[in-house]
Length: 277
Image (cartoon, rainbow, N blue to C red; front, side, top):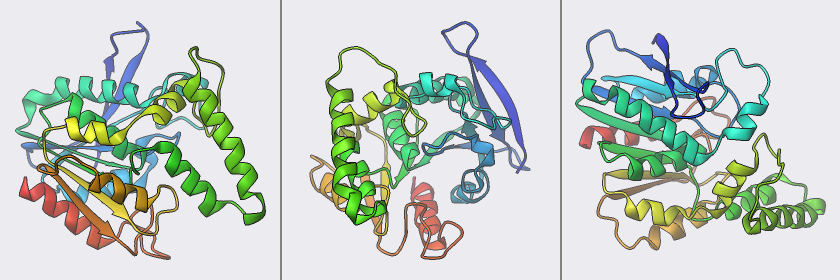
């Protein structure tokens, strides 16, 4: 698929633009599929899963990719403007503006996000009622802090796990209780991103959304806590518009052990959800 790159002016600041890429099918499409990438500091066009594999879940749709603040396909190093401005709410605002710009050209709009992109997808579902259906995979449970602690336990040598956890908990508490922004650059994210992620309660956002949502969770996910995701699903006050699928053998990228791409079983389930709606 060939993507055409376009830009929209943000309401503010005056010199700030949203870069997005629209991939069109060979035939005119009535549907639009927005794919939201995770938390990495790189262009969506450089992510093979985002621009080559995930479009298969809605093969009749045009594909929309929206760059995070300050990122372009030419970005080689993570720019300071990205660290200063990127956040979940900013990504939602940008996506909403682009969708409102493109909305009249499509009969249905589908949204698919993984990892951080799953959280953005859930937030956008609440913010933009015109979405037909949403899929959020491996976005974690109600508390981002729980997911980070799960990742630390899974990826840190046992002899230093306790000290790393203590250091992170101190950092998280400082962010959550702060009343004024301060300089942060941790894991390529700044204060605004950390503040929003650490104070966000995902269950509340899910419950406020009204359109169909499928939550997908992998059992071998070292980045977010599968058990906490299950608890969040069980604690939803209503699952009228919310589906849930669990894949015990898959990892954070929806791959099997030693797999190099998203597993066909997950793609089939996601394709079926969009076809159903």
